[in-house]
Amino acid sequence: HWDDLQRRQPHLAEVIERLNGLGLARPLVQDIVRDLAPADGGPEAAKKVWRNAIGLLAKRIPVASQDVCEEGGIFAIVGPTGAGKTTSIAKLAARFALENDPQMLGLITTDSFRIGAQEHLQRFGKILGVPVQVAGTAEILRATLDQLADRKLILIDTAGFSPNDEAMLENLENLTRHSPTIQTLLALPANLQTCALRQAIRSFDRLGLDGAIATKIDEATSLGGLLSAVIEASLSVCYVADGQRVPEDLKPASRFRAGFVSRAVSLAKAFAETDQMASRATTAERESERTLHAITTDKRIASYG
Image (cartoon, rainbow, N blue to C red; front, side, top):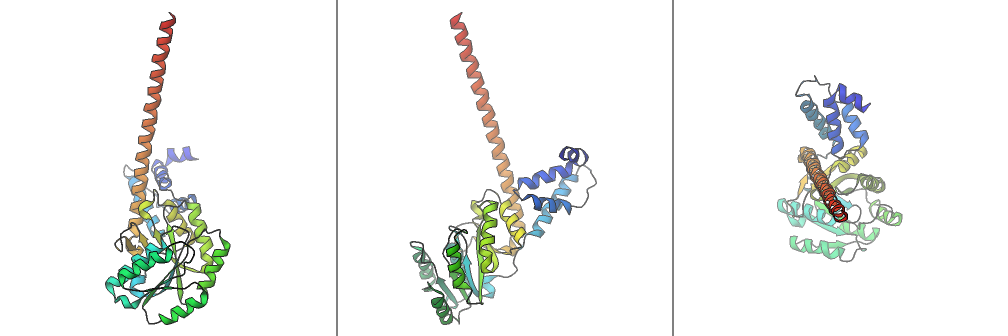
């Protein structure tokens, strides 16, 4: 079938290869190809179909129109270990403090598991002049939210753990489910494999996810897994974190829709170039080994002669 497609519609076969090169899941590639407009088969056919394909991909990426820092509310940031939850909260808090009175900001941590986790957020709070409240139980969390009821934005840091840890998931669910005003955002690291991203979404979805923060964009070698996971789950991306700077490296996803696709294409191109260089280096190394072996063999024959 593939050979027949390459003969009849080489431009379409090329686009499929390029979509696969982005690291997208096969069902997503099939959906995009199914919706492609037919090309005339001219010399520019491949370029036209490719532009159409990446346009369809961009439209499929679910992005939230809301800006947490502008609209306010109560948000708990959840996610697996090392997802960038605390750093994302620091960026959100700094963005809010730049545009509003810092006294309208509330910071809460429920993380009593990681060593030094509370101190990490407290340092950010001290820089902003905002005290960080500690709430280790659902009762304390409810009381703390009542105390901060006059704040425009409240950010809640949570403990990171494996999506397979049922006990920790239940503990987190107990903390958040008793307050219907808490919205839950999943910190989703772009440098995870597709299967790990899917598992994180499935596990944390029991908390009632209201959106996601795409983190570690700058550390990813491919964005195909992230894009496939959020598109499959229809999980809206609210923010994109692509660096360590606070708060510069946090962008509203509504302004980054085209950036997702352009970054994905750039990463795929860089990977392809690196792969070609490695292939050439391996070929040269093997050729050198064959040459050395031939020289050594000739010397042995000569010595016997």
